[in-house]
Image 1 (cartoon, helix red, strand yellow):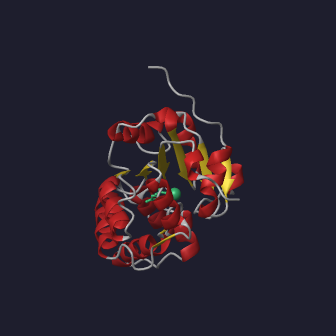
Image 2 (tube, rainbow, N blue to C red):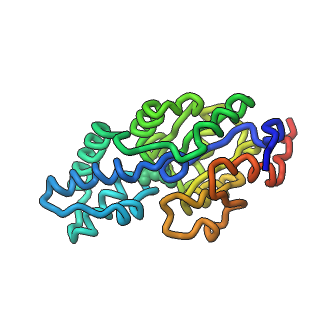
Length: 235
Ligand SMILES: O=C(O)COP(=O)(O)O
Ligand SMILES: [Mg+2]
């Protein structure tokens, strides 16, 4: 189905990053495995690494060590997270790529004047670095991470603070993500949400409670066109 971009009903789109715009689990997982190796622990395989995506580096590091039978106290965890961030920064895009259709779709949206930003549980610095290296910033104009505000997904404040920072109206915004954290944050913030089915979620995308699900990034415009149009806010 071809969609006229002029019919795109939202002025702003907030995208989740990992598992939605970019396939990053390989590079993230390699950094996790380096930290485990520093502690004499065996690496975690690719499938398990994918299941650790979506809640950010601190949760991922804690769960990775737990999978290897080691419970870290808060100070040990902080040190391991610092190492993870450093290792990840050394090799952020060795295997990371935007999913098929991302670059073309973002370009079409940007050309139509739609504003776009990323709301991720990655740290903001890591997110900006990866987006810039992949040539996605612009068209992505802002990125908020786990450390940008005092709340993060699934808290709605992660999205709402980002929209406020952009000067964008929540009532005219759409969220797109791959996990239950994205859907919960969007719904609590009052945004319609489209789930993508190729991400890292263990829950099938159609069970996340999103307003629509897409199986290809190229279907984003058509799916958005089917959603109830945002109502202009008075004032
Ligand atoms: O787990 C992460 O580091 C971030 O994941 P997200 O981009 O899907 O929020
Ligand atoms: Mg994600």
